[in-house]
Image (cartoon, rainbow, N blue to C red; front, side):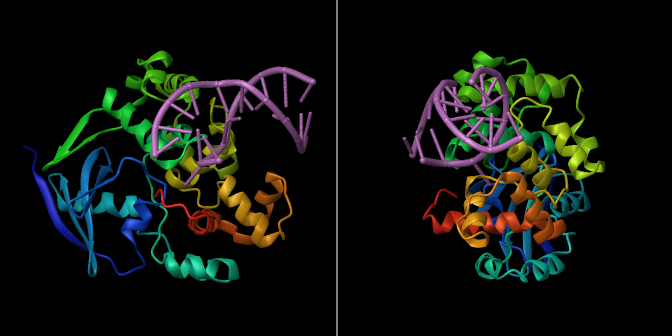
Length: 290
DNA sequence: CGTCGACCTGC
DNA sequence: CAGGTCGAC
């Protein structure tokens, strides 16, 4: 039995763990006895928000290591007050910012993130979860902590061995023809995802889009949710609709024009703005699939 | 260059 | 219909 680090991390900044985890950024996390249970830095973590901070439990030798991992995952070093202050200048964001106070961008593993969002193509959140879980269940390492068991996302090398036919059997549908070469390309080291973190946003985006199945939207999700490019602005059908309705009087605008507008309008934290626009637009549409 | 259909499957 | 992408006009 691995040693377990248990503890409390004080958090004195806007944070809503539930909203952040259940806002369609991560797909393996689940609730378990009032805790959230999910993958964190290659291990399994339990997190629970309580008055003044977070309770945590994780397999590890050191509390410091766990706290560092939580900090990274929840992006607790982002200048969140400054970000929120900037976004509040936009009247369309004031209400969603207030109603979803503490909704944060998460920092997940780039491979896990890219794979998840390729699976997200033309699917809804329950479907995405089911695909990711099927993949992980088939060839991912089984993690466990207490009573909570969780299959990890298979690494690219392992996934590359599975083959397109099996991926279809696992329920990926046409996405199998993207995921199979994606795994093979990453496994072969042709693109080093981690190294994109230190490249400019546009360059990292172009590199990601060399991959089959990675278009603008999927690339932007990987950039914001895993590669620290908070200026990227993932443009899905919901956000596109929100922008057209709220800022352009319902007029249809080409994506590149929306991107240029977002860059100008939201600046370096467009990724955060997108998350609030998305969240609000989904709620207004009466969805409850979070 | 913009536009359009095909692509899997499940709720 | 669902948090797109690709390839063919």
